[in-house]
Length: 379
Image (cartoon, rainbow, N blue to C red; front, side, top):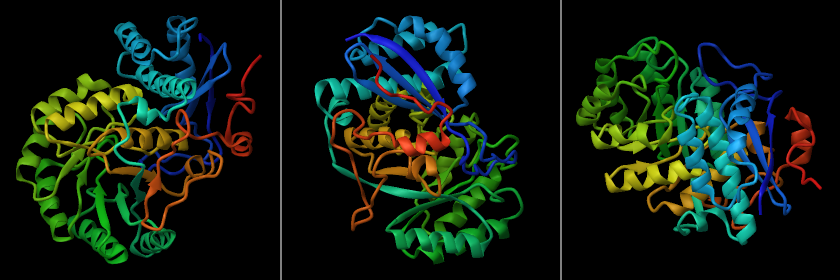
């Protein structure tokens, strides 16, 4: 089996708000699907959390290292892409594009071998996992309505984030968390400050005070409490915080995570499989985290393909018992055939079909994709 082609498909028309100061518009393309074609029929699909123009430019550089290669040799191929990216943008768009390619290669390998990707990643510890509903903070009324509606849908874990949190005053912060806790009752509730936003104003002293407040509301973890590069701040914050500290969603490749793990900066590490290097890198980060006594809960503000990858990852890591579910996004809810259904315990079944175990919805692709014929087998 040989790789014969690679194509991209940006998603536009239903891009959800991101909570950033430069807010996303529905037609902004920040999620890009990538398909890898083979000479024997199987087509693998991946997802990158970056714009289509950047992914296409990256693939122009990366493709010569892939054409004619056996797609089942996943880690050799993606490591070759990482190694050849040193001088052309390692850690940026090339790594984001490689992430999607890696996911697609694992999808092909699973199809070729008749096994779900999780089994190829090392074996399935679980066949279902709890998704937490990931929502943006808002004024108390709208946010409460949203959380109650999600609870009625069967979600039993939630994360609220960004908006004005850490950007106005302590009363706004606590009022928002108190309203969320009242809405979800004793369900899992996490809080994301959104420290990766440009010019995030939250300081270490603010983060320490806020962590103490969050403990009063039994918050499961405090995410992105500081700017992503402030490793010294995270180390100090974690040492004093009464609630677990999490982060890492903007880091790429395992080498970037290594110093955070070595210095015990996080209780929970959150690589994004659609930009951190794909499933190959997320698995290696997960193994390193486990050795360091740190949990891995993937960042998943992306697409249904990214969610499918995270589900397979969660099946193959012993302590990854939660995945992020971006609520209110057509790119998650409607992008794959059949969508997603919570069971009676509020859990998501992990697909057991070969590869990622999902098929793209042609109707949704035609509505939101930049390439209507994307990922259709050739020949």
